[in-house]
Length: 215
Image (cartoon, rainbow, N blue to C red; front, top):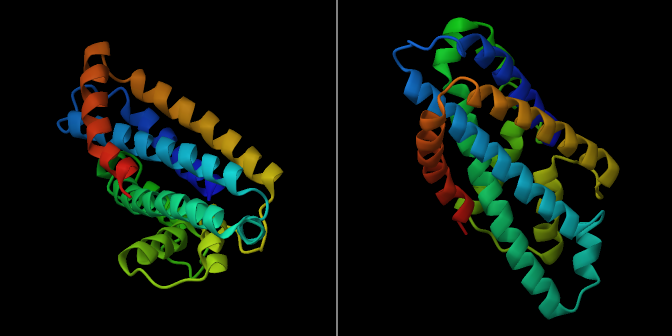
C-alpha cells in the first residue's frame, strides 16, 4: 500500500509543479485546498498505518493468538478503529486524487496514470482500490469475525497477501513515502503566500480531521 501511495504522490507532485506558477488560475483556491486535503489524508494514512504495523508486528494473527483473552479483545478493538479510519481515508483519497481536474487540464495523461496506480481497472485485492474497497466494506457491513480474521485485516491494510509482514520492506516503503510527502508539501508551500498557507491549511485540516477521528 505505502509504495502505491508514494507513486500517487509522485504523479500528483510532478503535475502540480507545472501548475504552481499559474497564480491567476480561476479555481486556484479550491485547487490548493484539494492539494492540502490530499496531503493531510496521506499523512494521516501513513502515520497511523505505520503505528498499527509497528504494534501488530510481523505476525498480527500470531500475536493475537498468544495473548490473554482480555488483552486480545482490547488490542483488536483498537486495531479495528484504526482499520476503519484507514478505509475511510483511502476512499476519500481516491475521490480527491481522481478529482484533480485542474491538473489533468495541464497534463491530460495524468488521469490515466492515477487510475493505473489506484487499480480501478484491476481485479487485484492489493491495489489501492481493492484495499480501500475491502476496508470500507468491512466498516459498512459489520460481520461476525473470528479473532484471526480480525487480526488479518492488518495484513489487508498493508496490502500484503502473505500471512506475515516484512518489516524491513514496509519500513523502506514508508521512508520513501514520507520523503515524497515532504517534497509535495514543500511544493505546495512554494505556490502560496504565508497567509494563504496558514488560512487554507486550517481549512483543509478541518475538512480531513473528522476522518481521523472516526471510530
